Length: 98
Image 1 (spheres, helix red, strand yellow):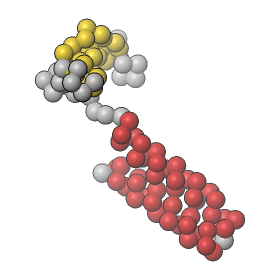
Image 2 (image 1 turned 30 degrees about the vertical axis):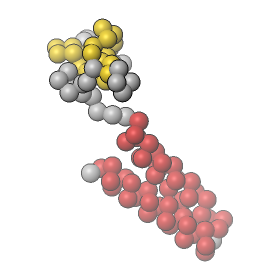
Image 3 (image 1 turned 90 degrees about the vertical axis):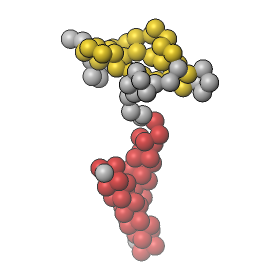
């Protein structure tokens, strides 16, 4: 929901920048740059950051590789699916550290 609102706002700013480009080209640069960066950043975020999976939902086998997520402090385990090459990151049950 928030992502759609941000994307809508970004496209509105980008459209305003294009309108300004036709009316006052010197004033359009900021709106065009901001609208473009916000649009691309919002779209990139969906592609790059994927939700964590549960052990049941993760395909493949556990690699034995574990690490503590530096942001949340949660112990994570890595699963690897040889068919697709996908690595999944799964929270270890009771894995809260600190």
